[in-house]
Amino acid sequence: MARRRTLVLAGLLLPFAGPAYAAGEVAEAKAFVERTGNAILGVVNGPGSAAEKRAAFARIVDQAVDVDGVARFALGQFWHVATPAQRQTYLSLFRQYLVFNVTGRLSQYKGTTFTIARAEPMNGDIAVTTTLHTPNSSPTDLQWMISFSTGSPKIVDLVAGGTSLRVTQRSDYASVITRNGGQNVQALLDAMRRQIARLEAGGG
Amino acid sequence: MRLTRLPLVCALLGLAGLALAGCATPPPASQPEALASYRQTNDPLEPTNRFLYRVSNAVASVSLTPAARAYRSVFPQPVRNGVSNVLSNLGSPVRFANDVLQAKPRRAGDTLMRFLINSTVGIGGIFDFASDWGYPGHPSDFGMTLAVWGSPPGPYLFLPIIGPSNPRDTAGFAADTAGNPIWALGSGPGITAFNWATLGTTTISQYARNLPGIEEVKRTALDPYATFRSLFRQHREAEIAAAKQGRPRTVPVWFDLPKQPSE
Image 1 (tube, rainbow over the protein chains, first blue to last red):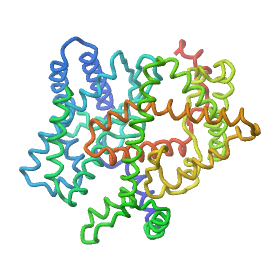
Image 2: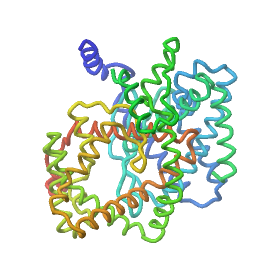
Image 3: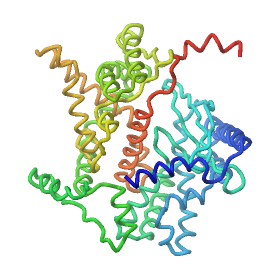
Image 4: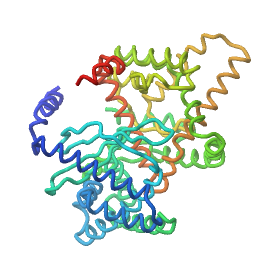
């Protein structure tokens, strides 16, 4: 009962906690998502070989995504277990993985257009909801979580059908680490390396 | 509290000959972070679940997956959408009943209007006009009803054919199946054949829809089992949160339309 009361209290206070976003930042986040979405679709629907497209996505990822922030979130509690050298290796592997993962997913968005439904502050970030219109299928919502913690707008998460990319990623990594002896960050780094090699061989 | 019943669950599974790999052992209290993550994952039957996951994958790779691939290559997307719409429309009565049991009148209204519109104008549910007319579809099943009533999901289960689930949703699935008004049509070879055909088509149609996503997870995840577990749980929680919240809009889309030009 006491716990429930604390939760209710926390819920009431939550909107006032964390960085307060000005209306200007909400509008900026919206414009940022529109720009980034158009840049991505420009590459998806544009000319160029798979390798050229991957290079173009790598540039977009570096510009638009808070890669290190997402990486740290995905490692969760094990960030504190990792040695400084492991952290460096992990951040670099995570970036490579992200580019391959994003490139692999994007081919299915050929011919897709999107509209921005709304933007609102949510849990300290700004959630921009876009509606994707893909030929021959019903429209789906994709939510972009935008953070200003680095000073400029950056993507920190994508949420579709209630599933968050970074939360899912964290479950995946935590499982690899705990199944290989509880605190084994090295096992994760090895698995990531193997996976990147596999994705690279498969043409991404 | 749920964990105290764990030995019993394990013993029952052992009796059923299912606990081939036994139950997972919780980490010791000396590792609080590992223990917290164990509780949060809530998958005490993980070894058994992983075994069933492997078996299901092996079986699916020679049955459901080729069938779904063939289905995708033979029928174009509009036909597949039509099939999926018809099957979804057949599920409307059960969805409506659950909306009512959840005491969500607007969601129940949506489901009812969808059934009326799509069964008639949509020619037996082939076309989903209701969505365009401001009655969007939503999932509603007895597992969600139990959740709205306050039931916790219970430990994660990976079931053959059904896939990711938990005791609450498994009970819900059984209740929805038993409560389907189709049984009231009576019995006989025609009804039995229809039910089997519906079940078969639903399985293939749903699997074909999910296949690209499933293959994407298997391609990109380090541990697909853990990734599916996380995806299932998040997706389910979002569906239940939406059901608890209900539908805020009180005016259908078409009622708003004439006002827009003057704004």
